[in-house]
Amino acid sequence: MQQTKQAAFKNLLHISYSQIWTYLECSLKYQFQYVEKRQPEQVSIALFFGSAMHKCLERYYNKIKLTGVPEQLSILTELFAEKMAVDVSSQKIPVIYKKETPDLDCAIELGCSLLETFYNSINMSGMEIIGVELPFSTLISEDINLVGSIDLLLRDANKNLIIVDIKTASKAKTQTDVDNDLQFSGYSHLLVENGYASKSDMILCRMDVLRKLKTPKLEYYYTTRNLWHRKRFARIARAVLAAIENRVYIPTRSWLCTDCQFANACSGWG
Image (cartoon, rainbow, N blue to C red; front, side, top):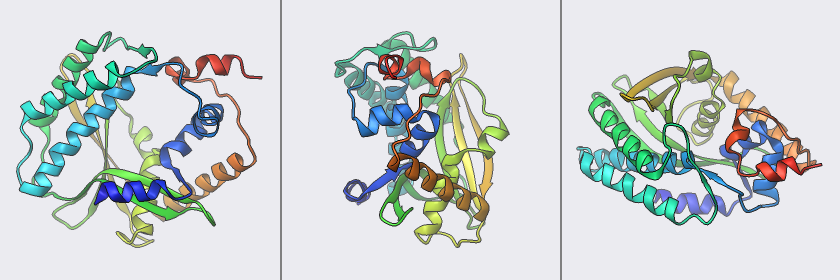
């Protein structure tokens, strides 16, 4: 059912949170990726790593939602290794490896270690799983929909909804990072517009971060989103849409340039 919804959303005139984020980080990258639809010059191993991790955790939570018991760790690690191997081997463009993942085998080993840490650390007591990779859509402007999928939506013992965003990272997050995270504001907006909460509600949010350390660990960061955050997000989204409509695309230099799949095109721009 959720996959059917996701397919239907893709047929709408839409913009996703990831597209909004891409534009805000570097509007020229947005032009290359979403307007010109250029073939990437290279791809970071982090893309495959994150995708495989999300696939495994989606399976973990779906198994609990359907049966009340989690998927076996051995099945999750096998799934991770298989997806990584298939995704990387199918690439026809260079794959950029990282310091903590210098090759595919190291990436798989790290991923399996993170999954083991997650498996032994996660605590679901008192939590009800409302949805996993839950797709939503709502009008963000006159004729364009905002679409997105929430990693995990929980309800706690006090009947509070909790938006959970799952990430892997080498560095710890700061509370300021989490409080300013635009994705939570977008998810909160989608929940309210789809009737899961009222416009005046304060919605709880939790960022689950699996740290890529020699001894991996799972960290939780909490924040909230209210009406002010949702209004601000909608205003930002509409401003991005207006800029795209007016073809405003400008290169932005940042730490993201290191792994950018359009580095050469950017260097030749202008």
